[in-house]
Length: 116
Length: 108
Image (cartoon, rainbow over all chains, first blue to last red):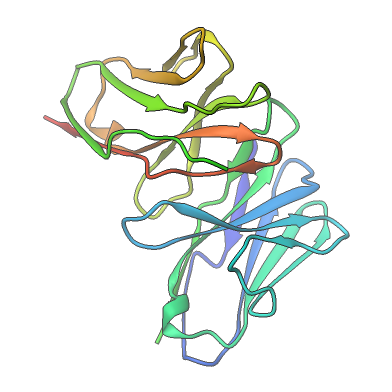
């Protein structure tokens, strides 16, 4: 199947700093990528839909100025958590929509963010 | 988008068949049923997808009755490595909406 990578796999930062997470589709082009957040023992929550060459679409309750998404190419989307605070500590997962199967999405391995 | 409903957890033993039923009463005509598996601290992994009747692949089978208001994921002869959370989703348009998932524990 298609491979999606994320970098970094884990990051620890101080409160107030910004953190960038990269999501790459390694062997296919993805016009649409998705960003999810998952807190411990909870399900994945969709944060935003990232479309190549256009602005991301954010889910209700997600601050677009805090979670900046850039989808500059068909294989790369980035999520920047600006001025991170401890409550932003979570597991961030991206996915990319494939070309086969109805709405099949391939997920990255996730990025564990810890804000001190 | 209404989420699906599935049991919170299930226990099983190695070599047994595990069946997880998911309820999706208000499924739309265009919705497909998709199941994902997630291990701790990893991204979800696609298992199987179907629209109606039965779909089988090398990993699992998916049974969807005619009214499509529920579906059952069947994992044959589970092993310890099948311990994970299993999510049932309705694939509506461009989005996947995750429900609570079923935490399956396979015991030796």
